[in-house]
Image (tube, rainbow, N blue to C red):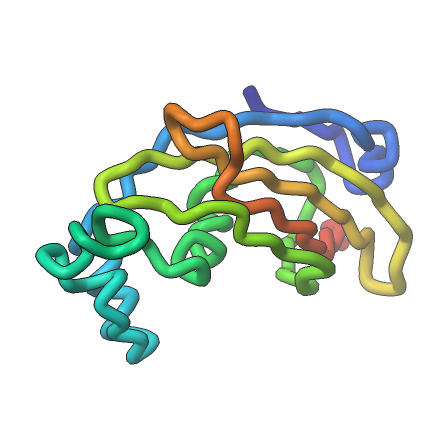
Length: 152
């Protein structure tokens, strides 16, 4: 389901609406690529043999990898007509609630939490929960802020 808004000026009407994305697999190859990109080569992420006797029983994704996938996981969940661009304005709160094992699937559930007018457009606060397939407890909850700039 996608949240559809007719124009940036109508974003306030969408506060409280939610949308859920598709499941996305977190592969060991993706975890390894993220480790290389960030130079975070902890064994809990990369050493499958050692990880079997570690605290999680398998390798896990970096918390920041899960966070960095928010644009992918939320892509297409909010459509605002008449928008020239959307700029990442920042994060207000992030919580990593449980590890994401290699080979598991995650998806985003996002809710429009608040909208405020800004000189360049509208700041939209989204509460996004990253669900872990087969678990009642989410992997991550983040309060993100995007700046929606109307077309001229």
